[in-house]
Image (cartoon, rainbow, N blue to C red; front, side):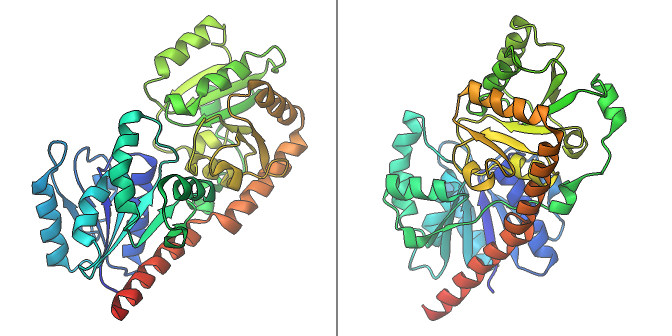
Length: 373
């Protein structure tokens, strides 16, 4: 197999970038020839990359960098890289010219965005769609996302593939007993029901719906909500908490390096997003045996079996969110059953091993197809 490269926009600690870095580390450890190439700053994840993974920084500058394109072409040639996985839209503009048809190389697009809402981005999609229609494969994170993009951007469905995110089920299974010292440090009573949400505090995550549910008259007074993550919405959310006198029930935890101790405290996990491709945070909660309540959007419908592993509700429907929370808060046996079902579903369908195998299959397919060219 000729070497394979993942081409990223940067090495920020976002979900897509973290997933790719971890996957590259695992693949190199088992002897697969994988490179990481990234266009520009930030370099946050650089220290998370194993020493055995070759890394190339293209030092992109400006809106489009011909210098970075030239560096990419030179690196690909010197390392004899045969396939590139362009992670999200912008890297395609660099990856496709170097790996386009006729070069003897393969160009894959790995798209982790569900919708393109902004007008400026929709205009750029004219270029991105042109490139995507000419990629050897386009990889999507859920079937809902695949269907939307195939229809909206006129992609050939037989040149698209769905690879679900995978998590290390053993890593997130967590301890049988919660971290009581952490619980005490967060000032959570022993008999409190802990509801958790792990997500960047951004508008599309719709945290205010969750706060509105916590402010509902029907919500149990002993429920405590942990908001794990940071982001631009934090000031507005804190203002909402103060305005609705929710300070006793809400804990702003901020960004954490290891979410597992916090998962160990949670009785219920909630993700109220208005848009999702395929949430790693949901998978991690499911692996930790926590029932999930989330919006019926994107890949969440493919992850969560409503009434079996948790509950789905229509986006922005706070009344339905409250009903789901009240049901789980009142029934500990239901929480335990849903949590066990969720963990089993992760092991069966969404394991990290399954995800890696599908990427390796694509790499092998690319090599065999090239050999026949």
